[in-house]
Every structure is written in C-alpha cells, then in structure tokens.
Image (tube, rainbow, N blue to C red; front, top):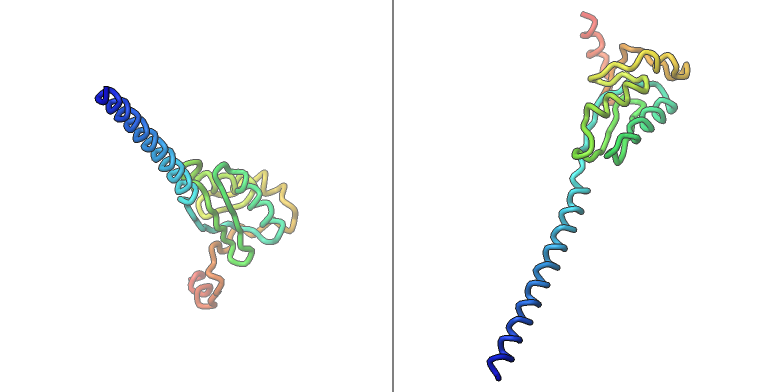
Length: 146
C-alpha cells in the first residue's frame, strides 16, 4: 500500500515541477518583449527647412511612420533626430516620408509638388547647408566657393 502512495506523491511532485518550468518560460518571454521595446534605433540626418511650421510638418510626417517613437527637427542645425523600432521601419522609409512632405533630406530630394504647396515661409533654399554642427565657421564658407 505504501508503495502506491509513494508513486502518487512522486507524480504530484513531477506535476508541480513542470508547472514551475512553464511559469518560468512565460516570465522569460515577457522579458524579451520588454527588451525589444528598448532596442530602438536612433538616427540623425540633415533636413532642409526654415521655421517652426516646417518643424511641425516634418515631425508630423515622421511620426506617422509605423515604429517611430520620437522625431525632433532642429530649426537651427537643419537636422532631425529620430528614434524608431528597426523591426518595423528603416531609415530610408523615414527619408522618403520627409521628402514626400516637400522637404529635402541628405539622401532624398523633396517632392516638387509638395514643396510648391508649402507655405511661403517654409519654401527653403535648395542649396542651404544641412546637418550643421551649430558652429558655422566663416573659413568653411570661403573654401566652398573655390
């Protein structure tokens, strides 16, 4: 009789162990999902534009891209900082959505029609320097003309 009881106890013990392992696996899955959210890609690149209205148009366009968590265009430096989930989108898609809204980026020229439809104050000079460091040196400008 005792042997039977022992084997039942052993089965119950095994059952508990397997439940613990399953619970452990679920916890591990949750952890991976959390770390995936943290694994964002940060990029910065030049985007031409003039004013606060440009900033709104550019950032609104970028924020519509699936996977983008933040976009911040710097009016003075003509540069955008974007944080995005690399599994949902890529840098080129971000360049293209900015270009489609009428703005030149370092890699894609702005859409002409969209550019013409921008408010007058937003119609930037197509030769303006992008991705500026913020410290514009006179020497750099004189060298460019030679």
